[in-house]
Length: 602
Image 1 (spheres, rainbow, N blue to C red):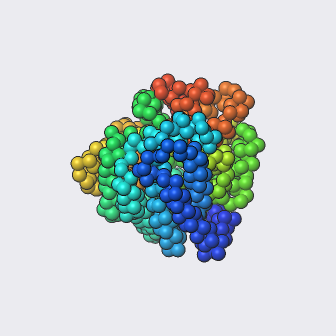
Image 2: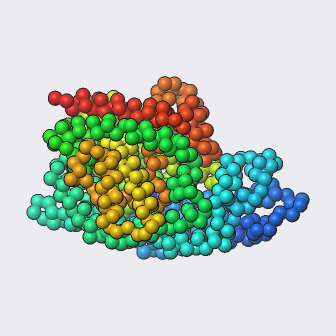
Image 3: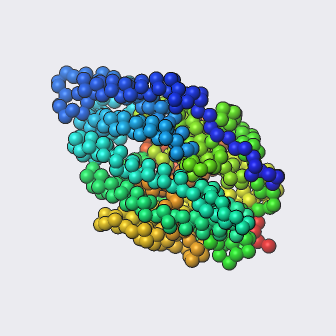
């Protein structure tokens, strides 16, 4: 790849106009007003149908007909709210200083409290019914059999409805408010960095992107500046984390979960046996990842990697990728799998679904969000490396998953996070494997490094995050934690997972402040590992029998909200409840470690 002035390339911003012309447009105002009225209409329907009001159903009530009316209304509302809510959130995600978007988002969240209470009422009502009889007597219920059975179980963990209603109302000034404070505060952090005798102010996302710089002095300076900024900003961030985890513990206890982890496992359609099997295999792989980290250190001429060396590029001089080169490569290599996948990616690029430029006020990292059936928007902070390209492929995988879910109702497509990573990992692997086969040795080393770097993050670093969150929740059950205690818990988690693969004197004590996952969903970590290893396992099945795999893959993606992870895996002959499958997926990574060692040995 050419290295000429790629950093000067103009990166795209996503185009929201096809959805609505603007936040201040009559079209958006009308859609917003209609959504608000639809919430009120559904609330009236729930009242007229006596959904979750505590009254016993009278003999002769046509429960099936009532369910069908309520389910159809609920699905229609959620679809409508997804478009309006995602539209507004996209403006906030790229500019947290956008006062109009923030105001609209707050309004939507206020109305969302009513929707949340309606969802709880529906769950409580379903919990009181003979769900199997309902499924047998209604085609609509039969089509929603899995979410209905889940609702029956979920109802066992509901507080009394008045308490659930109060919890939903308080959430806006509780966990949601703290999460919003974290997002707004950290997205607006400005980090002073001295380069070439001059001090420049960079957004935190820009500073963190310098971890990919080839110059170690630049990486170290960015790391030092980042750590100092987190240190100065840590008090309000620690308050956010203490309050969010405190709320998590309170609600888990009141809802009679043994632990927040049990609640998270239920939400992800995974049982404890599957989690333990995966974590067992992951811990067994630590020596292999440490081999990779040590080989990388040798390649870079270092005795041991510091934390700021984890993302250091390895490969030849021509290692930069332009955005245009990356998009063309993705479209071409997706075509090796299927024309449908390639055409989907081409459409996403052509219609400007992607916001790729890092800038002040923009959320860090990357995500994909569905906005209309089959249509998504993708946020990235493109960094002109193969890692930036593979991240685009990953997020496009999420978009392709959304495409396959388009035929499903909102109740049917409630996909847990682990399974939501299936298509993204698969697409990322397609691009990585294709790149490895089409470039020379130096670029091959670079791409192999990018793959292992990502796998190390999703196995080793994710386990450090899992360990950190587990430790924090255990201590938070007794009292709030100080900034210093958060830092020490983070360092201990990194020592236990990275081991001697990193310099223990140059770890990242403030990674708890840098990672937004701690401030959202409970245990937003291990599902990434599940997604990576499950995706690699599926890719192995694809290579063994491509045509048979293709015949069932899109249907699998469309069904991720319709069965447990274990049952969906069985479609491809995979047993995820024992370590053997996870070990086989990790064997793919072990093979890459061996190749990396060979390429880096003089």
